[in-house]
Length: 144
Image (tube, rainbow, N blue to C red; front, top):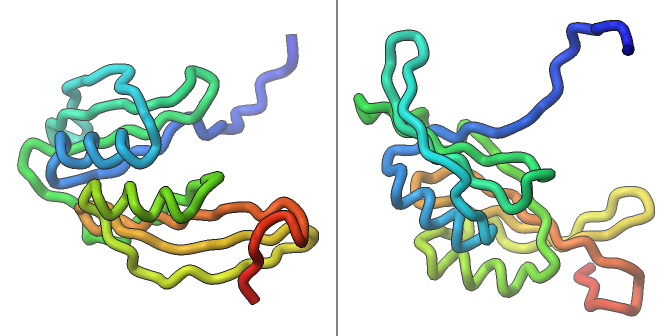
């Protein structure tokens, strides 16, 4: 058995929202998440309800959390980065689900790979950065 290191490993993301059901509907639409469970809990004396969303048990979870007192952080204080295989279809789904495009699509090159990238806001104003990797020059349209 390996020696304990005390290091932490990221297992999930918690996003504080103002309307839990609206946020869950949005993320189910744009990510295809299924609800794995719903809980009531309290941290630091503040009770909340959360919904845990996940595509596959091997993937990270996205937990949406709404405090009973209704207070949520300012929009944009968290940025979630996702990848997609079709940025155009994602855009349509996000807008139809109540999201907004906040940054015009542009190209990104990091080392050997290229991507199309754009930012969107969920219904609470949280920022989603969406990347579509472009496999190889000539296989997909490239924006200079």
